[in-house]
Each structure stands twice: as C-alpha cells, then as structure tokens.
Image (cartoon, rainbow over all chains, first blue to last red):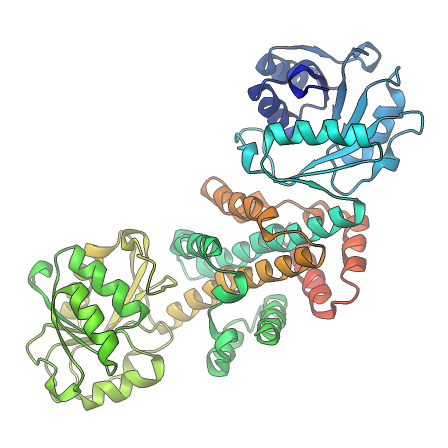
Length: 258
Length: 258
C-alpha cells in the first residue's frame, strides 16, 4: 500500500489527535474525517485539517484505510466496540495499552505510539519524535512502518514490555526531572530568587548530552564524594523531610554508579 | 572605577579560568597575567588571552586591580596566603566558600560566583550566566557589580546562605536530573534501545519551562494518580531496589505537590 494514498480517520481531537493530524496532513496523508464527542474540538481540528467531522460514532465513514484512536486510555476499547463496521486498520496511540484493548472482531489492529509529550497549542516537529509500533500482521506492520517513516526518522518495533520500559524511562527522564525543577523553584523562591537563575544551568545540562553520556557528564558533590558539602546541603533541607530523602537516595545512587 | 580600565590577573587555568578569562577579554577587560602551577595550562590560556603567564607565585604582578581565583576550593586559602603582596581586590569563584577563606590581611575581598557548569572546550555564553556576588565593602561591591554586569544580564547579591540554597537547587535541577538521564539510559539499553529515543522528550521537557512553571508542566502517571500504571512500573523495576525507591519517593512527592 502506498502511504501517500492512505485515507485516515482520526478519532479524538485532543493534544495527540491535533498534533498527529497536523503532522500527517503536512506530509501529504489524506485525513478524510475527524470524530470527537466534543463538537467544538471536532470542528476546530476538522477546519485545521480541511476535512469533515462527526459527533455521532454511527456516522463515521467506513471507507478509511486507517482509524487512528487518539483517545484517553480508558475509552479506546468502548469506542472500538461501538464503531458500526469492522474493516480498516485500527491503531491506538496509547503506550501503556496492548492490542487486546481492541475487540476480537477487528482483524487489523496496531499500536502507533509517538513517544513525546504533547500540548494542543505547541506545534511538534515529528521528524524528531520516536514512533513505536506493534502489530500482529506482517502487512499491517509494513503499512504502519511506512506511515511512521513519513513522519519520523526514528521508528521502532516495540511490544508491550518494551513500551513499558520506554514509558518508565520517560517517567524518570521527563516527569521526575520536571519534579526536581519544581523543587529547585520552591527552594529558590523561598530565598526570594527567581527560577531564571537556574534555567541556564538546566539548559546546559541537556546540551551536554549531545557530546557526553549522562555518566560522563555528571558533576557535583555526590560524584566528587564531597561529604562536607553534602552534609551542608542536607542540613539546609532540614525542614523538608521528603526532599532530604530524595537528596540522600539519589546522591547514594550517583556514588554507586561511579 | 571604570570597569573597562580594570587590570585583571587570573589565578588558575582550569575550566572556570579559561571560560571566564575568554569572556572578560571579549568584553574588553584587560587580563594582564595568568598564573597556574601547571606550565602547559598557564601558557595555553595566556596565549588565548594574549597576556603573559607565571608559574612562580612570587612573580605574579602586584599591579592588578583584581585577582580572580578560579581554583579548586581546597587551595584558595593557601594561594591567597602565599601571594607576596596585599593590595588589589581578591575574588574567588567558589560558590560554597565564604569570604573567610581569605587571610585577614587582605582588605578587599569578594565572592564572584558564576552559576553554571563549565568545561574547557565548550565556549560559554556568559550573557546568560547568573553571577552571584558578595563583598563586605560597598565600593568593592560596586566594582564587582560593574564587572559582572559587563558579562551577564543576571547579577545578584548573595551571601553564603543564599549561595548554598542556589547550590542545592543546582544539585537537584542539574546533577540529579542528569542522574535520572543515566538511569533512563540504562533501562533503555537493557532492552536494546538507544538513548536517542528519549532525547526529544528530554528537550521538550526543558523547552516547556519557557512557557509553563514546572508544576503546570507536570504530566505522567503520578500527577494523574494512575495507580495501575505506577504498579506496572514498580513491578518492572523489581530487580532495581534503589531505582524502585527513587520511583516511589518522587511519585509520592509529585502527588503531594498537586
């Protein structure tokens, strides 16, 4: 199947649906319809993608090649069950769900998981977004591979277990680092200092990853084994039990990884 | 005192000395001499800064306005003691040391702490580097402020306690986040996946800080209270006691900050 001639219906008009829809349109994939329960979201995205939209699931076109579920994890199964036809290749974008979320009657299903954090407003450069795919059928996998390759340079086959690992890694490197930024912000603001004092350091820490591994790039009291500074830091965190524990635990682990 | 007419001697020719020296020269400050115990480092930096260099501390010029100690914490006091003159404004760049590291006979001393991570090879854009300064004397402080302002848009007065807070924040937002990248890398590589799969997400997490606070930007299972996903993640970390503890502790703290 030629990717460029694929007809796609997007189910859902949230962050992922919006960004993925725009990216697909940009590379010349034909989006024929957007479905969302929410009229405003559906019509807004349809306008952007220059296609029609549906609110009623029973009216969704049965003539697409691909149905792309960009929905919350907990509704994917229900929507798939409720669609009044069984043809087409049905793909969801939820990293932590498997193929078994789809009803058995659907013969062509897959997971099409773009590994990035999305917001509605901020345009995403998909060429830079890894896409993880899974499908039982060889031909379906080839179709998905072709589609993913249109969008991104990084395309990987990944089963549920692999996606879970990728997801956990993302929690550490994205959600948890973001929480450490939140802690830093509170510490600074208690002293009347703006968060901007630390953003150059945050940016440089990420820039270093272009030329060094995280292990090589590590600096600071823990990797130096500078116990006197670490004691001063823990004393300063005296009133913050949880943060002192986080400080202690990560410092220990840094020293173990040396 | 006009900043542009200041004569500076740099003591030390490591990462900080190199980057600070180059930045000062760039904005037109006259570096008259570099001193380092290490002939190669001294001559390399002196060549770069188009000035002379000394290996013998007793030969360091007594005619500079500013002596900038870009040395390891533990040697600053000794070098200050060993210098054969007492004139000039003596500044060190060590965030975790106070003014008391200098001998009492030095009447003009200060801390000039650029809050960034430096390496010898990678040029630093100082306009973006916060500089924290401390001095007892009002005039000295004014001189330091002027010098710092030549380099950077972000200049702050900061006593030892404030610098300690800034330093701890840096440990959380730089050293610890870097360690979380190291953990993510190991998790991915155990599954045969390259670290590059996660760098777009890391970069986006930092980019988001331009428009959102870390608290607003938070995503992931902990902030959603998605216990079933968190259980799956902890099960996957079954053989990594420390990482499971880190996972647990930070997830808890994210939920507390909601």
